[in-house]
Amino acid sequence: AQSVAQPEDQVNVAEGNPLTVKCTYSVSGNPYLFWYVQYPNRGLQFLLKYITGDNLVKGSYGFEAEFNKSQTSFHLKKPSALVSDSALYFCAVRDMGGGYQKVTFGTGTKLQVIP
Amino acid sequence: ETGVTQTPRHLVMGMTNKKSLKCEQHLGHNAMYWYKQSAKKPLELMFVYSLEERVENNSVPSRFSPECPNSSHLFLHLHTLQPEDSALYLCASSQAHRLRPTDTQYFGPGTRLTVL
Image 1 (cartoon, rainbow over the protein chains, first blue to last red):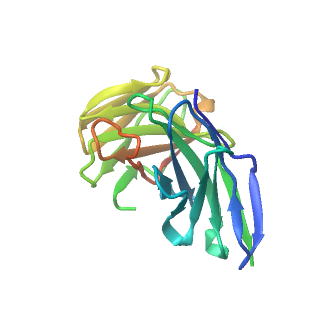
Image 2 (cartoon, rainbow over the protein chains, first blue to last red):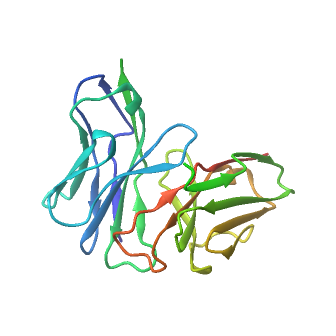
């Protein structure tokens, strides 16, 4: 069975500092990895995804994520955090061997950017 | 967030009430989903519809009844709910009628449901 782990419930970072939100995964086949962001009282918004190719994926709002197959990780990063980045971030994995729907979401990491 | 809309945004209901949640997607997608989001838990997939046909039902209690009259609309009918059903219910859609691994799901803002 596939799984996603977000080991940190909350990450605090000062505005202007780099941020990292961690995600590790476990799948039986090739992983397709996603990051979503959820602002208060809003639905999930797609940030970026890794399908194949370059291990560094660039997404919306200046975010990027690095796929590391040996460490089975897909950490979300941003060089300089903004207060407006404060939100809940979800990592998700889709197993290529799955059927119609084998999307697994993590429990989410709350990012707090401190002015 | 005009791609996927959900109404109502907030709903408070008693355990004996019957209510419905509505989702509409304006993206021309062929697949729609219901998720349940509870605090400190991963998103739980409830139902998947592809070309108006239900293709996934993840052991959801019968007090939740989905309906997909066309590819743009999805309903979740609720009856005799329990307090533990209180959560944020999210609707999503994706393009392909057969969900490809690379497809991106687009989410609505959710309905915050409180069962008293």
